[in-house]
Image 1 (spheres, helix red, strand yellow):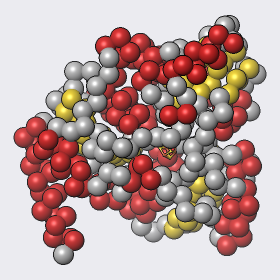
Image 2 (tube, rainbow, N blue to C red; image 1 turned 90 degrees about the vertical axis):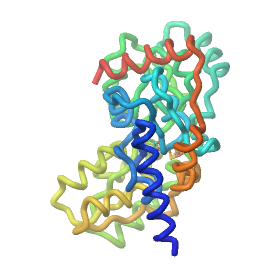
Image 3 (cartoon, rainbow, N blue to C red; image 1 turned 45 degrees about the vertical axis):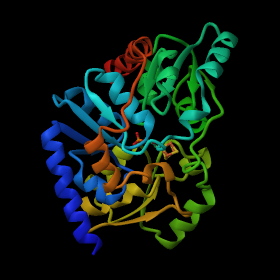
Image 4 (spheres, rainbow, N blue to C red; image 1 turned 30 degrees about the horizontal axis):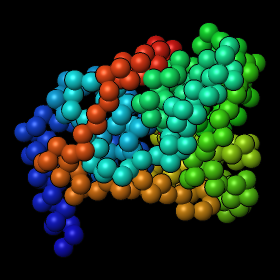
Length: 305
Ligand code: 13P
Ligand code: SF4
């Protein structure tokens, strides 16, 4: 029964997509059925780059708000839609413009690197943005020895291990990644001793220490494809496992311990993608002045990589 409804909805989505000259982008953590109807599935960096290349009129961004905002900042002339109004990123909301302005006055000689998991307003007050796949490159390239790094304390800590520069971290974190403990990885390795451990840099240092590779969700997709190994322990949100299995049916993927689900990433389903296209909702709007300033920070990032 559900399959039939899905097939009908998918047909309607594809038809509307054509009529409205729209492209569907989906983050790697999206539900399987949403990944399956997307034109592009990727990590934050991959999707940002994709946005810039697109010649369509409309982008339906299946992900969380900061990702759709990033698309709008990079492509202000396109209509950018977020199918679920409530899909936010709790980590992005931990740092506000006001909090960042206060930190900037405390460290007047520092420059600000903000993770893309931030609001447009925070990006606008940053010197440069970064994603999980280019954070170190951005820090190395920016013309400053002192860097305020917002909002993820774990990513800041990870980057600080590879640079002489002074990193001033903000105390934000992702509730999904931060709950993985070293013990979880040890247990998973005991059960699957021949598995390769891939973890996201939003994880705690104790988890990163036990990993074979620390990389973005897009990096995990590439590594699993390239690797000769047959088993992998995945230290990130479990939506990624859907894509990993789909692209590598002969390999096995296991979550690193507890259920790792980002509830916000799961708010988007076929029904709200359909309504989004049909009713042009929910439109991302960013004030001109904020968009221009935030774009500078994103463009600098894209220039460094
Ligand atoms: P990626 O850029 O690695 O896909 O990460 C985005 C994110 O929200 C991680 O929690
Ligand atoms: Fe934000 Fe974490 Fe969800 Fe990524 S997984 S969107 S960082 S809450």
